[in-house]
Amino acid sequence: MASIGNDANGRKRILFLDPRDGKRKTVRLGKCDKRTAQAIAIHIEALLAAQVRGLPIPPDTATWLKELHGELREKLVKLGLVEAPKCMTLGEFLQSYLERHTHVKEASRGVIAQTVRNLLTYFGEDCRIDSITAGQADDFRKWLLAGGRSPRQPKKPKALAPATVHRRLGHCRSIFADAVRQKLIAESPFAGIKRPEARNRDRQAYVPADVIERLIREQAPSAEWRLLLALARYLGLRVPSEPFSLTWDCVDWEKQRLRVPSPKTERSGKGFRVVPILPQVLPYLQEVWDQAPEGSIYIFHHLRQRESAKAADRGFWGSVNLRTHFLRMLKRAGIRPWPRLWHNLRASAQTDLANTFPDHVVCEWLGNTAAVAQDHYLQVTDAHFDLARQWGGPLGAVPPPTRSASCLHTPILSGGTESGTQAAQFAAQQNTEVQCAIWRRESQELGIEDVTHRVASSCSTVPSQKLTLSGFEPEF
Picture 1 (cartoon, one colour):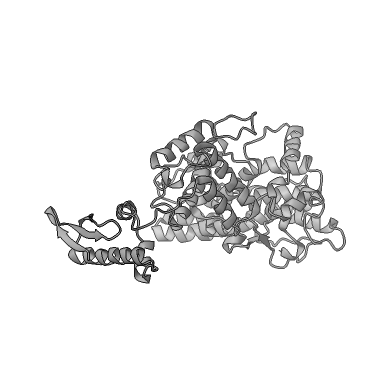
Picture 2: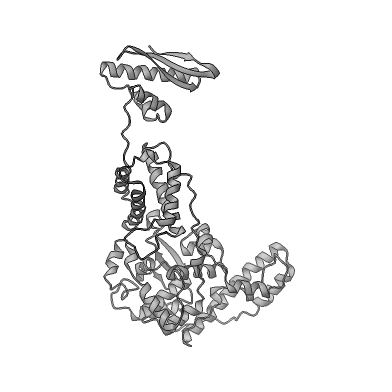
């Protein structure tokens, strides 16, 4: 029978006679109360009895062992009371991790597989997963920053971009957190790793609306390309996944709203979002509708007639190459390409919309969060500096709406067509009315009387005539 001994400073030890060799053995527990020591002694007696008599371990002891980790378990292993756990190698665990994560899309699995290759290259397939320390994880981070690129990309620099390292270390955290939940390791070596800054300001660029209008007017080869550029710049759709998922039943002509399918977020319960069809977009959407083949389902019917669209329907949207033709249009127009062609159009759209509408509204339309928008989308433009330079009111006061820098103040440059001019007039009218209401409310709350008068006077200059577009459904 096991007995409990007391040591100095409240430490406890368990002494028992091992019937397997007749020797008296000790398990030192350190500081603990008597009741805990007695409970452990009962489990040790049950383990001894099970081994001597060849009986199964009692359920209570088996449950206790299942949750037991750390130094005490190692002591029981050394005494032969518990079998040493079979530790998986890194290669075995990563393979099982990929096999179990069937809930993610194939394209996402491919991105995770890049991190898996990095781990196997650095640590080796035969490395025990429980042998990786926090120090080695930090060395892995440094290796990614210095030379983590795959040898299959010899023309690119060996070092990965900080944003890429940030993303891959995030995958490492998820992978080793899964190992902790699987009881393969006690703690994750990547839990406290500091990731590089994900935001790369050098790759951010604000694209003025008149640049896109020039491309639409002079270089876009078809109506679908004109609509694609407008959707990306004014509504911030993710290209190509969201435009290529649009069908004609997504268009609400009466309310002038567009239901945008979102393949990126559908697994997280956000399969679509509803956005307004801005006046800057409406003429191009109408043009595509007028030219659409009889019985066509998708809005971008002709652009989808490519082999890569089949892979896109399986989730591999990266195979749809619209960038090459976009670069050709920029070259013909004599416009220097900006980094991240499509993403910065989306970021420019959110920057402009944020100048007019509340943050929660813009984020709902763009399908992201305020935190993500702040880190990766919103930018400071020249118009903001011009507005500050012209603003002579007291600090804290709200500038008048006539000095607002917003995408909705940008006229539609449609080659002088009647629809483009009317759309621009409608945009300015609607935007001024909205801004007047916002600034009037904020000025009253702040008690800024002079701003209220200035806003009211600017509101009185809004044209009262309604816009009428012939041939559009519905008329408004």
